[in-house]
Length: 157
Image 1 (spheres, one colour):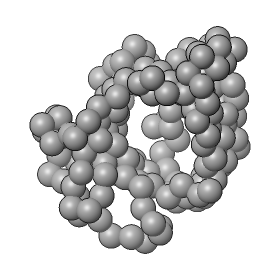
Image 2 (cartoon, rainbow, N blue to C red):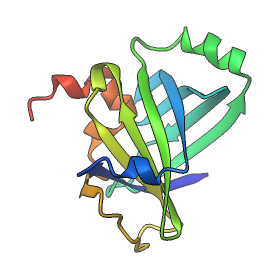
Image 3 (cartoon, helix red, strand yellow):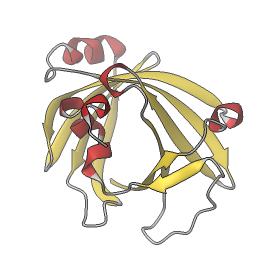
């Protein structure tokens, strides 16, 4: 029930040619509180409800519980969510024994592209593909629940 992951910016879009598949994802939050969030997601033709806890100090570890729900229920729950939605294409990219999930955002977060890789333990070493850029693990600005209320296109970076 714990999620251990690292998150990165990208320095090129070469990942697209290496992707084994891609999905359109729309998600909203019934609760986007930093201590705990409840997310509703439509990924392709599937629905999911996810509860996430607060991250540890490094940002690599947090409680995550996810359960598939019928697509019709996910769509109905999206209508009850807090204002705004996250709209993105997720690419699954295999690289040297890991699957990198690369999210290309749209809407108010257009221009942001992030890669995540799940780990089996916090100190796990991974081979990094050449298109991987700066690590942003633990930077709350890159959490989807934060991007909902502080979209990438409003940042002054």
